[in-house]
Image 1 (cartoon, one colour):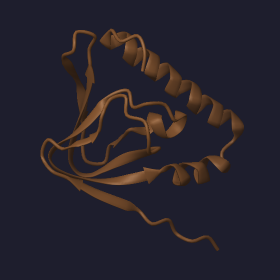
Image 2 (cartoon, helix red, strand yellow):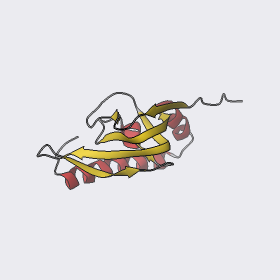
Image 3 (tube, helix red, strand yellow):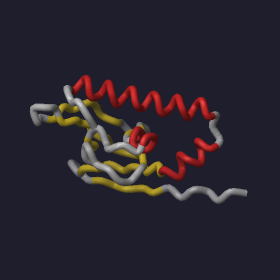
Length: 126
């Protein structure tokens, strides 16, 4: 019988940065338990472009969890926001049970999304 995973929960206040674009470090994704998260990306001219908002129940930051590359956007709390952190260990445990084709497909999808995000915002890397 396996031990249940303990969920890590964090609360952020209005305007607090959850992670910055280009940040390297903790491999994790986030599930919005309550509140809302703004996702933005810095353009080549130095201005920020809001890409969208993640509502309650939404997941963000998942690409760094899959491919261990720097964050391609910034995430900021809109109002008081609680998130559940989805750890690298949690994902790896799920992927161990997945077909190798599914794992490869997931990596390919993440790479394509990163490339499209860079093309849409005029950035060449990251």
